[in-house]
Image (cartoon, rainbow, N blue to C red; front, top):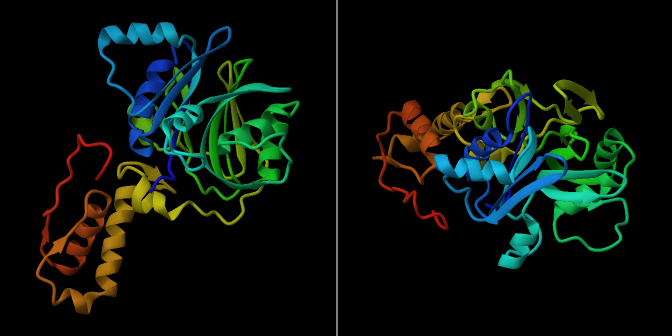
Length: 316
């Protein structure tokens, strides 16, 4: 499954944005192993992008990262490629955040899949973020650009971005297919694909960015704009089943609770078969919570026969 990316954006009233971004994305590194990227604003954009997992940063290294990523506002991204090629050069090209310069200059970190775009583009694109970024940057105003994305781009998307004048923004498609939440930590306002990105930074979870909504943050002011009414709210089912961390909150409930309930429902549906079972085995790790739920519902013993090697990153 390679359809989940993670995004994070932070606007700090004082101090640097990078530490919030680092921990927020590290908590979501499960959403993308192929590349990572950080971008901040301080009299221009500053970025660091590379292939692989986000590295562990020791105390003395933090100062070096802060030199490369100054500024109190920034956005970041971890990626699994959902479009384009997966060779090394293509992965380097597709690493985000991506910068676009048209009538608007902005950086964008995006999670989703573009099915098609009504607007003819000047040249073929290698990634979905290029489609979104071009539509956004061709607009005269940010709100106009996000509205154009919702009207002209068919697909599932959530995104955080940063304009060259220092406005942090986030938006979500009208059906809310891809997750995106926001929070306030007193000194910092942040956006994250999953709530765990806020928790690790001690940022209070305020809820989800609503489907069809744009939220803008600048100089501490927060503006929420409902651009499109919510269609049939259709959060991707694989977020609960596979992508998200069990301690994240989606649609108002912990992912762990939903997975346990999946297992209990399965136990009720197959109660007659359960009577003939000797043991339940799970395939780590997302199925473990469902296996526990099946065990609770049926009383069939649950054993952990398979173990995952946590330090082998290219295979389960």
